[in-house]
Length: 302
Image (cartoon, rainbow, N blue to C red; front, side, top):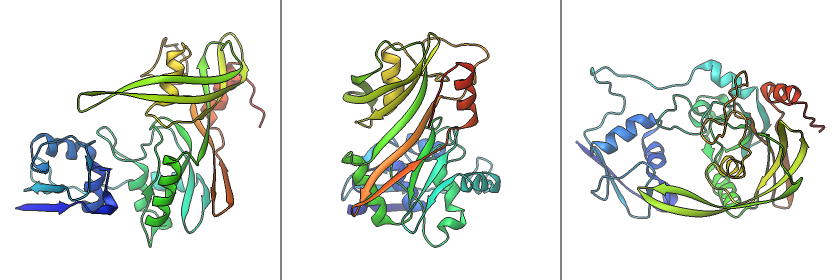
C-alpha cells in the first residue's frame, strides 16, 4: 500500500521529519531515519535525509508502512510517562490562550531526535494544557540546555512567534559557566561557524554579545546575548576562544573529575513585543547550576 502527501503552503520549508509528524502523529525519530534509509519513505521519488526541507508541491510517498510495528510484528504505542508531564507542568512560567512559557529541564529534547525517547512536544500533547488544541514548537533549545522555552497553542501564534525569532525580534539572554578567566569583561564574539548538510559544507556567520558577571582563575560566569541563531552557537564560540562551557562533552578542551556532568548553559530570559505589549520571561537557575557557582566562588546577584 502506498500513501502520499503533497506539501501545501502551510508546511513550506519545513524539515521532512517534522512534516511527517504533522501528517502522521508522533513517531520515534529513529524509526523515521530507518524508513528513509531503506527507501520506505521518499521525497519526489528520491531517498533523502530527515533534515531535508520540503517545499511547496513536493510529493512525499510512504510505502507499506505501519509506524507502530516492531520487528516481531507486535504493536507498540509511544507515549511519555505521566511523571514527566507533571514535572514539566510544575515548571510553567506563563500560561495564556496563545502560548505557554516553561523553564525546561536539562536532558529533555524539544522535539524527537534519533536518540530521543522523550521530547517536550510529545509530552505536552498529553497535557490538559493542550486539551482543545495542540503544541507548536517555535524555536530551538539544545537538549542539555535548561531554561526559558516557548510553545504556541495556535497555528497563527506559532507562525507569528516563528517569524519574530527569524527576524531577531525576540531577544534572548543566556547564562553560562565556562572554564578559565576571560581577559575582556565585555565584547562581541564573531565567528564563521561550519556545519554540514547532506555532505555539503556550509559556513554561517555567528554573532554574540557577551558580558562577564563574575570571574576568577578557575571559571567565569557570562551573560550571553546571541544576535544570530546558529546551531550550538554559544557552545562553539566559547570553545573557539578557549573557554568551553562546563559540562559540555561535545565542545570541550579538558574534562575535570568530580564536576557535575550537566551542561552549564541556561536560557535565562526572553523579551519581545506583540501588539505593542512587552513580554519578559525569566527562568530560575537550576540547583546544579547554583551549586557550581558556589563551588567556583562566583556570584550572581539578580
